[in-house]
Length: 232
Image (cartoon, rainbow, N blue to C red; front, side):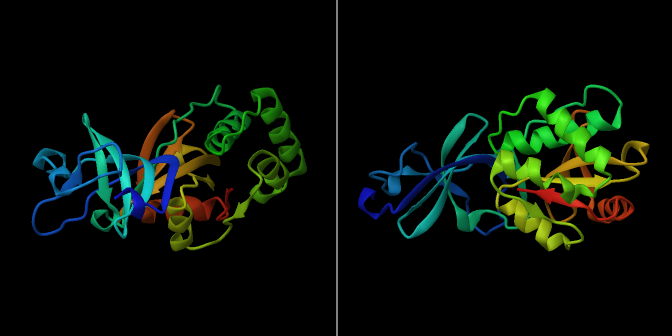
């Protein structure tokens, strides 16, 4: 099997769910794609089939794409073809804003985005950059200098459709969104981390937790926030 391995990539961690398919779900019960044979195929326990599987590596071998997973003490390789295309959730640790002030809400959301890209910007430097942006009264894309300097790229998602948001999440890039009405706040930032058929997952700096919202409600809150969004 080793000779057929043409790509092996450590990736930012994300969660997937299994497709509903006839027959048994299985995985390769090995922590290496080398020297795999049919004896490594192991049935996934029924009580885990609806769980989220944490992915930390992607490989291409035996003419398929495989995800290395861990879930409830199990680990191994799942074939990508058995993974839902309508679910993705990024492993972005929530950060709770320091105070109720708008600038601390904005800093917490941006810190999650930048940390995901590997930035080590200090809290003081981040707050100074955000204050400069606030003083300029520019829209969200006005943070371009900060985003590019810390991540070396930028993605303007202002007024895009939800398909484009999903595409960015499938690229394993979280999204900062300006919303209004969430947590009964006139304006705030949240960071989108995933989606399924009906819901979007987001880290809420106000609560410091992973939350979820229906697409219709997110659309309403985003519209009231002038449909501004940014990623890297």
